[in-house]
Length: 294
Image 1 (tube, rainbow, N blue to C red):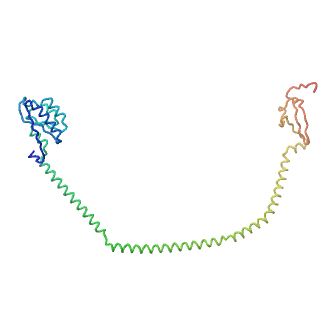
Image 2: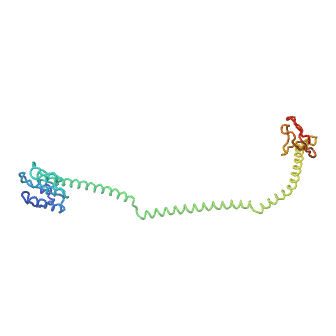
Image 3: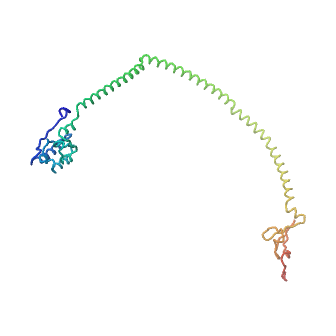
């Protein structure tokens, strides 16, 4: 640890590693280390015979290792020595020195990484400074003296004032022209002139109305006479006046053939003047059998 990671702080918890008291001391040491809030625990001892290392095969030690929340590395004996603690621990190291190498970060690697980070940081700073320098140059070029900005704003204000006056004059001229057009149209549509024209038209219509009514009545009278003559020509009454008659049954339907009658049926004969009640004696379609009382 002193060679690879001198900055790492170590805490040594001494216990017996063989003999009758070793089991309880190892269990107590593991629990003490687990409660100490360490980053990792190394359970280690040097080499020895199988009997010397037997305490690391005990159930109590194995259960203490399994219950340990802190990551624990088992480094018991030499590389060829294997105990139950090696299987229960999070990591097995062949020797205590190997366990130290597993947990000790190489300071040279950290130094190289630190140098790399320093180079990257320096490059980032240089790039940031270059970027800010370019941005500052751009802002410097855009920055103008307040007097020049005021002169530009004054010139723009004069330009806007001139444009506003010109637009106002143009708008006023258009409104005047529009007003003159409306006045001309209003004078042409004065109510007095319109009333005079309407009065003349009413007088003319009053003169034309009686004449139109007389002509319309005359034309309707002639049309009515023509229609009456036409209606009289096609009227059944004109036919009856020439000596013909119309036979009607009980329902008022006209009899057009003998097949519509029956023997003994009473009919109404309509003449040109008046009506007659008649009875069918024989329609020449069915045998006739008359009552002796008829």
